[in-house]
Length: 402
Ligand SMILES: *Cc1c(COP(=O)(O)O)cnc(C)c1O
Image (cartoon, rainbow, N blue to C red; front, side, top):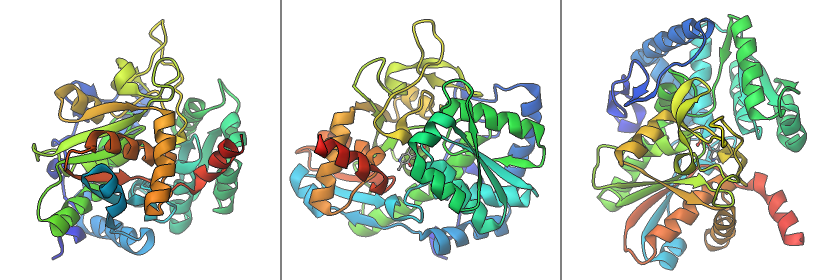
């Protein structure tokens, strides 16, 4: 049987065997008791689901026929000529809805249905996870509520229209700064009060079992890429690259290569201006602490309180980070770099012109990092292109007009 048609039964083959959600000292479940019991049920149901071949087969069926997987691994000859390395792009931008997020929402919506949930709820900042969740909910015929800060909803009018068009209900909150973390609080409050709802989380963050679950559903990226590069080049890459917001597209690629010690692993954080306080580079400028249910790195202010982040890329603009990435940083297995708004913008334009591919501004961070590190090194490399850049064209137009 084709290896791509099989998903691992346990998490063992892509991460440490993980039933507590700990990655070294990071991770865990730092939540009030009302939430803890829900999370334990969720962890149990997730483990039972991935033990069940019919669940894995259905997940892969939708990835293939609905999302359009496997996504191609494209040899970027022009970019390679410019840098002097051989560079391949993993084309997550070609997925239905235009990014990697749909891999995870398909997995979680199938779990929600299996658990008999009457509706799914999701938080969203820029609206991308809201769109991916509303899409999966429409596909499965499950009711969907998307929580969004009022300020974000006003800034993201197009995604708000998409969410509504897809049949989901948008619930805006005016609490706090009316942005992502306030939407998370509103969604959690609703979840606790509505036992039949399923909280569909969008990145590799939050309490156990979410980091393990999201890592599992994104593992398909690296699993395919590993097989594809072996077919194309007959060997493993020297280095791999991804951008990192919460950490889901990066862990999706990295997890298939963690045991290949000869493969260098590099992640690009949203550096914003490149220094505090205008940054989203959590692993470079943050400290370990408990934030939104997990022990991981977090950006804090002078008093040690979690603070707002800043990045030109909405998908990278989050003050927390995946506990697994905190662990990979601490052990030195992966390296985390600061990529500034300006470097990402330059790479966004450069890739558009050299390869005819307009990347998401998030993904452009990974491209920028790769170009810097690969220059004249004669390496074989894979960059994860997490999403397409249609959503970023408007901002680019405004910048060019000015
Ligand atoms: C959401 C998003 C990201 C960042 O999220 P991760 O969980 O870190 O992958 C990156 N790229 C794109 C295109 C996104 O939509």
